[in-house]
Every structure is written in structure tokens, then in C-alpha cells.
Image (cartoon, rainbow, N blue to C red; front, side, top):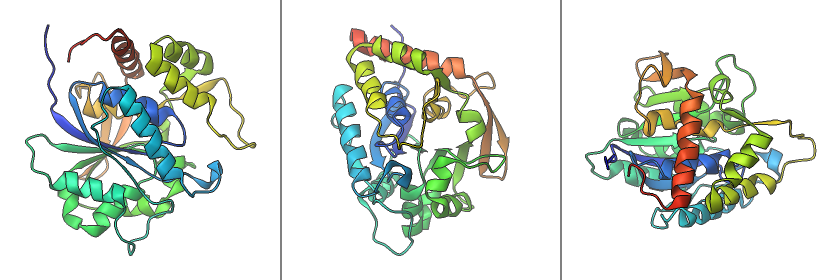
Length: 280
């Protein structure tokens, strides 16, 4: 059996109590043998999901539950604060985790994957500017045509602060690309509930999602937070994704092999259910 070893450390940041596509992506990252997930951080929810209070902690609880289900309860989880970025406040537990991991010597490079607002990343950079040279940020967010976009608009000040940082290497996956990772709701239910306990747990998060009354669900659902897997866990290659340089340190994804991402995700979920080591 061939063996794939970790070649990157990953901290995964998301608003876990919001759209469950973040939890699907977390499971995919943890089950990918070329990733070494060293931390999980939780950010606050948009007011569209109701009062902010407790959203980050609820997200942390969900991440902990999922990590236990994946057999990785040792991965640390930390919560951010339930409000947008402010430069003057003390570091949250989430921002502290990012800075602590970034300062930890390692032969493996560090990637911070953010599938939500950039609040926790902004706090870490504001507290210590040297953080910018210690990790690469992969962010699911923004729009090349400046359309409304949830992750940017939930904390626009954090997004502006992070994207303006000249020394931070940023790989941005915008709305126009991440929404291509789309399932029909029927496909999503069938695919997840066919992969045993893990998939059933993930599907239940979709069923229980507290959507506001003004939001109606159409027959498709994007799993956009899975897109960063082409940077962290799958080999970067012109066949998997394409990128356009915006500055010396920032590039924007222009195309992604959605079949590769979805195929790998569902295969890893199925192998996990079988208890098979796969290529790990």
C-alpha cells in the first residue's frame, strides 16, 4: 500500500454554526492524509441567522463533535468573539491559536483556510504584523465583480484589512468560482446519507440549519467551502485549478476541477465509514 504523508499544516477557520458546507469541508480536510490539521477556529455568524451572541461557541461545539466522530478529538478548537473586527480589543482565543501555531517551529509550511468572515485572521495580523510572513491564507470569499458576498460582507472591515496586507500570501477563491461546487439537494442528501454515520451527521446539520423565514431553499446547494482542498490536500496542477496573480502576494482562483474535489470528498467519507486506511 502506497503512503501519503502530510506536507502542510492547516488551521481551519469558519463560522461552523452557519452553512453546514463548512463542516463538510472540515471533515474532508481532516480525512486528507496530505494535510496535518493542527487547529480549528470558530468565527461569529452573520445577523441573518439571528442574534450573534453565542454563535462562535455553538460553532466550536459542532466542530468538536465532528472531530470526535472523525476520531480526531485531540485537534484543538478555539472560539472567536461574536462581533466584527476591532483593532483595539484583546486577542480572542481563536486569534491566539492562529498566532501560537504560526510561531511554532515546524518543517511543514502553515496554511490558514478560512471559509467565513476574516475576523479571526484580521485580529491575529493586527496584534502581530510578523504573522503575515508565517502562513499562507486561503480564503473562500469576495467577488471578482463586486457582487454581494456573505463571507466578505459579514465583516467587511476585517476583509479590507486582511486583503490590504502587503506581506501576506493570499489565495482567494471568489464567489464566481466557489459556487460552482454545487449539488442538488437530492444529490446532497443521497451522497451524505450513503456514507454512514459521518455522512448522516453532516446531513442532519443541513436539516437543522436555522434559516430565517425570508430565505427559501432552491433545489441546489453549493459546497463552496470545500474549494480550498485544491490548495492544501490535492496537488496543485493546471488540471485541478487555475489562478490569476493580482499582486505579488495575492492570487485569485479562476477555475477549479469540481469533479476532482467532490469525487475525492465522497471517496474519503466512504473509506472512513468502512474503516479502510485508504492511502493514509
